[in-house]
Image 1 (cartoon, rainbow, N blue to C red):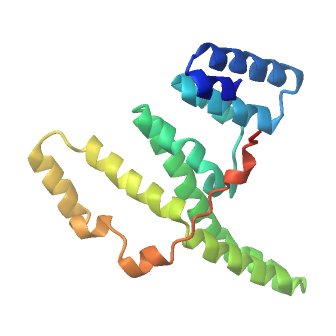
Image 2: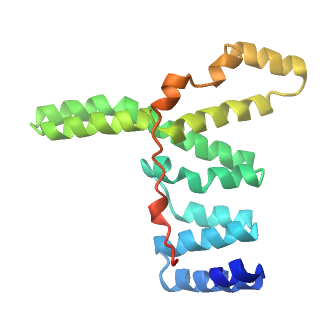
Length: 193
């Protein structure tokens, strides 16, 4: 049905595809692939509220925020849903903050019980998360959202930017940008090409 839509651009194929995906979710309510397929169709239809509802049903937690945030953030920005974009960015930043707080305790426990391979795994995970392109993007998005929220007057914007240390703090250095890793997982979506 998506191929038919691509061929002639008639949205009736998208509506039919959405009905098939919804039926699939009725038969298998926890099927991750049906949810992703329905989100893809709803994105093409421009149905933001339904798109967001299906995203919430994915029940994304922990590291999946880093790998799957690309599903919600561009859509939220595209449909001017700043509040939802802010929630997604905050979830991603919270993941990094919680990981930074919990990793020393997990490493201590691993040493205590002699599971030394777990320590190196924890360090690799923390390094991967700290160099996440999605995390850097979410932090930048949060600054942009804060600027928008504090932009009553040009003087307010100037005061806000000065309180943040000026404009240069909004950017990542070229060296730091080269070290960012793209942790998005585009393989989760089924394609029938």
